[in-house]
Amino acid sequence: MTSTTATELAAGGAGLSVSGLSKTYGQRGEIRALDDFSLTFPAGQCTVLLGPSGCGKTTVLRSIAGLVTPDSGRITIGDQVAFDHAAGHEEPPEERHLGMVFQSYALWPHMNVAEHIAYPLLTSGLAKTEIAQRVTAMLDWVGLGGMGNRFIHELSGGQQQRVSLGRAMVGKPRAILFDEPLSNLDARLRERMRMELLALRQQAPFTSIYVTHDQLEAMTLGDRVVVMRAGRIEQMGSPEEIYRRPRTRFTAEFVGIPNLLDGRVRDISAAETVVDTALGPLRAVGWRRDRQTGTRCTVAVRPTLLGVSRGTVGAGQTEGHVIRTAFQGSSSVVLVDVAGAQLVIETLAEERHEASTPVAVQPAQGAVFALLDD
Ligand SMILES: Nc1ncnc2c1ncn2[C@@H]1O[C@H](COP(=O)(O)OP(=O)(O)OP(=O)(O)O)[C@@H](O)[C@H]1O
Ligand SMILES: [Mg+2]
Image 1 (cartoon, helix red, strand yellow):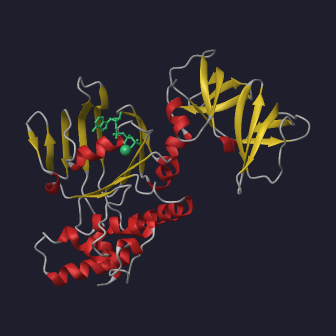
Image 2: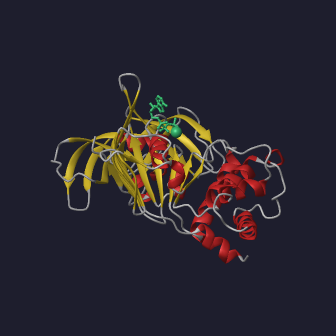
């Protein structure tokens, strides 16, 4: 089988949609895992659910997979209604035709790699030769060509996760549900697998829902990122939108923007708002358009949009004092006190700033900052 056929095997999928999903746990229903959650998942796209522990990400996935029964709502997969609380309709997991990849690889010690990948096809009615062909194609596609006879204990963590991916994809599911698939891997392998997953998706776009609390994975892999908070959607958009224009403190902090500055609106135009802050006037872009001049507000400032240098404070710069510097290899993170506000600045410069050094802090030229709604 050629690699094109392997790609064909992987590509595709259906769109999904969930509406009004609620789910509570506990004797009195006091744990609200999902709260009237509605979302559509476009065919061929990767939708990332990003949020802190306990916000309901896994509950969304398990509801879609049919492993959890929501208290209300409706789920459609392609043109098929998989769950409809009002109509008392619920399809069993095996009729939903979804693939799943978990954090724990859920592989069996007594089966070799090829047997794992063939497993979902055993009940498909396909001829043995066809199954063998598909397994070989899938092994190649996930980068395990020639390793079909190995047992699970003879594989690295990354290779094991590829086996689960191959197993999830081989039956041409309508969508693949990923639940923190990389979080058991060490940092380097995680990075490599993240790039490989991206490459696989670019070769053959398939419908996927990817759950993570890692903002880097969310930004890299998502066509769209949905930030979740307490069983609801906090914000959704493209990775760029979420990172450049977070709507709320919660989103800003969650996508790794620690600098939230108090400000006061000085000037409003159609494109942007000028906000007075401890760093001087900042040109910010926000979502809300109903602000008045003089009102208090919060601006999120990305750590990479601030410059830090020693020497005298010039025009457009503000004086601060270094609290500490952390060397990270390719960059350094400098924590600076500016008029009582602590700012995190990430810099590629080689220069090291010792604690209590006076420094000049400067917002990057032309940088636009995000004005938050709360
Ligand atoms: N079977 C269960 N029984 C009781 N409570 C549950 C059960 N499953 C989930 N919960 C609760 O529902 C909420 C949402 O859980 P869920 O597993 O969906 O969160 P999550 O976003 O996937 O978190 P994590 O990042 O830690 O995996 C949490 O408060 C959790 O404790
Ligand atoms: Mg989870």
